[in-house]
Length: 321
Image (cartoon, rainbow, N blue to C red; front, side, top):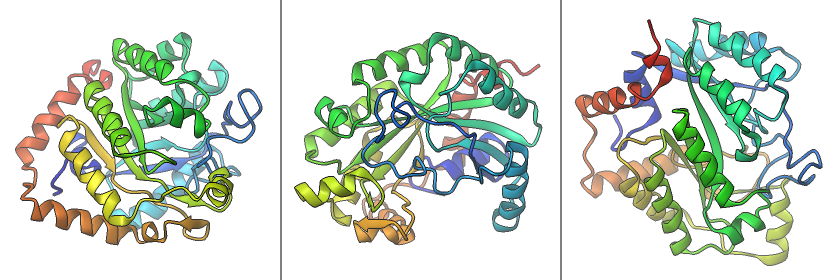
C-alpha cells in the first residue's frame, strides 16, 4: 500500500486483482509532427512520440496484446489488462480508423480498460460522442498532456494550442461523463515555484480521474536538448523535484488516482538530469519522505470508497446490465 492513491492499489480494488497496462502502438501520427501545426512536436518529445516502450508497429493490435501479455504474465502474474495507447496522438485520425481499433478492443473480454493519450485539439464533438459510446461498453479514459497552465510555457514548449482550449475541452469531457487523466511536468524551462503551484491548483480544481507527475528530463533526440545547450536553463535537483511532488500529492483532490510520480526516460537517450535514471531510488526517497512526514498508508476501506465513487461516474459500470 502507498501513502497516496496509487495506480496499483486503486486498480487492484477497481478491477478486483492485479492490473497492468499493455503499451500499444496504433500507428497514429500527431498534428504537431506532420506539418499541420508544426514538424517538431512538443520540445521535450522524442522521435517515438514519448512512446519508447510501446509495442512494435510491425504487429497488429491483437498481436501486440498477445506478445505483451506473454511477457507481463511472467513478470506480474496480472489478472487484468488495460490497452494503453501512449505515443503520439491516438484520436488523430478518421472516425473509421478509431472505430476499427477501439470497437474491437471494447469487445475483448481480456481487456478491462482502454487508456488513450491524445490532444485537446484532436477531440471534436463527433469524436467525443463516439468515445462516450465506447465508454458505455468498457472503462475508458483519455490522457491529456497539459504539462503547465502558464501560457508562456505552453508557447515555449510548442504544445500547439492554448490553455483556454484545454479548459474548454475538459468541460466537454465532464459534460459527456468521459474520464480523463492529466499529465503535468515540473521543471519546464524558466518556470518557478508559483508556476508549479498554479498547475497543481488547476489539477485540484478540475478533479481528474487520474494524474501523472513528471520531472522534466532531456533526451538527446528531442528539441529541448538544443534549447538547453543554448540557454542553460535550470534543471531541478532530485530534492527540489521531490519537494514539489510532495506538495502536489498533498494538494490534489483525494479521489484523483496517481498513475506516476516520476519520469521514466530511456537511459540510452537521457542527457539530464542523471538522477532520474534511477527511478526506483527516486520512488524510494519519496516513500521515505512521506513516512517521515507522518503521511498515513491508505486503508483498504479508503481505497474502496474512492473506487465506488469512480464506478458511479464510469459509464462502463453505469451501463452494465
